[in-house]
Length: 227
Picture 1 (cartoon, rainbow, N blue to C red):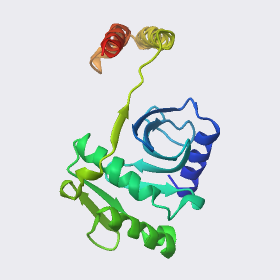
Picture 2: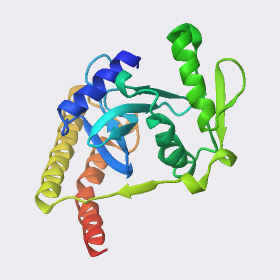
Picture 3: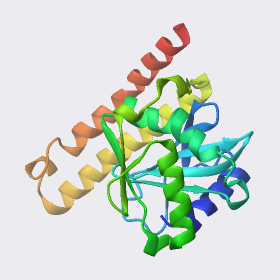
């Protein structure tokens, strides 16, 4: 993703807070963790991109794209050099990545030839400020020992779902299960072969598992409401 595309995404999320291709949860006072799907230009559109969205008040002013072996951060121009990115990285994002995932370190790359000297210097300064250590001109690493627990502000804001909204998701799940069964029948009748001869579990077994998730979701809601 380019800087321009991420800025467009931030602006879209500010204009449309309930953007349907984004599912998010608060993990800190000024940071949301989001899964975002892109419809055009990406072959694996069923797989979401993971973003940390940085807020100032009720507006998003920056985003960090989690690429597992790299991070790509962008702050809207008028909000730069105000400490928003450093605070979000130190207090929420890096603690989350190293405490809540299986990573023992976080690598990033900053390429001068891609972003220009000014942006390179600004990004390098921001990375060093929060504790990244420079390996060479382009690569830096942040390890578990660099975390400062005194600065943690992780705060998971799980809000649950109203019963009607949960029922809508369960209905959608049942439609997906039915669709999988129909696809299975169509493919098998078309080619005279059962799908499980080529891949296991069968599509019908997958559909059954999808359909059964409605019971799992009900149990999850029950346990959540009980607490």
